Image 1 (cartoon, one colour):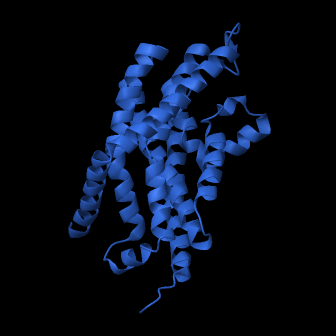
Image 2 (image 1 turned 180 degrees about the horizontal axis):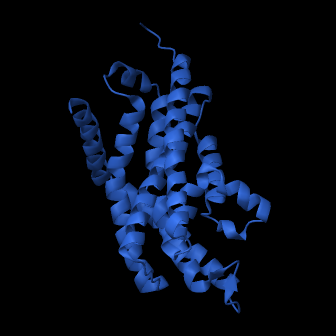
Image 3 (image 1 turned 90 degrees about the vertical axis):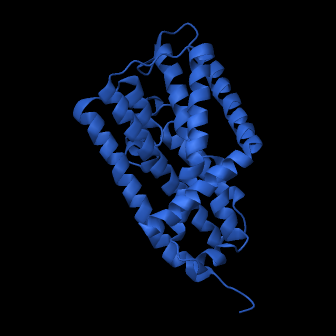
Length: 266
């Protein structure tokens, strides 16, 4: 119980930091809105004169865009750069002296900020989705509950990928290139840019076995009703598998990464 309190305290401080620097958060959220509406009008032009594309109606595509935005906003750019900055500025050495697990501490920080960022983002985008984009999602309580579990797994998977990418900073002199590369690969193979159903058959099958699809494709498929019953449980189970796999992969890479640390002066 004592160990849990340490990480709850870290999560609490992360919540306070998010509230204290709310201007930065709302600027990032505003940038996300611009991206959401840009994609909305792009797809609206693509659907002009068409009733369906790759099995998606225009109503389903609008819902897909909103769910995609919510799934991606659970873990912010600030949460990502906070991990890499600790490595690049050397403050990670101080963390090694503390009686805490570095990975768990970073996850606690991410979870703390997510409680504010994710909740506010979901509410505001939900209002915009209903008022401007006119999105309607209808699902029973079982599907809704499974969607919440799927979004939680989505956060775990994305944290695992972000954490592994940040640890690569032990072997680089900067993080910007790594962050851009991670975002490009994740947005493409998760279905954030284009639904996986639009991919060529071979590429779609390849993307479906990778962890990235767990971030957007699975929760979006649940929200649209494309997954149900055993198939839905199987995909959520796959999300959980990747979350656990990436967590232990992070532990393994951390054990190798800390050997790179050189502390001068004692």
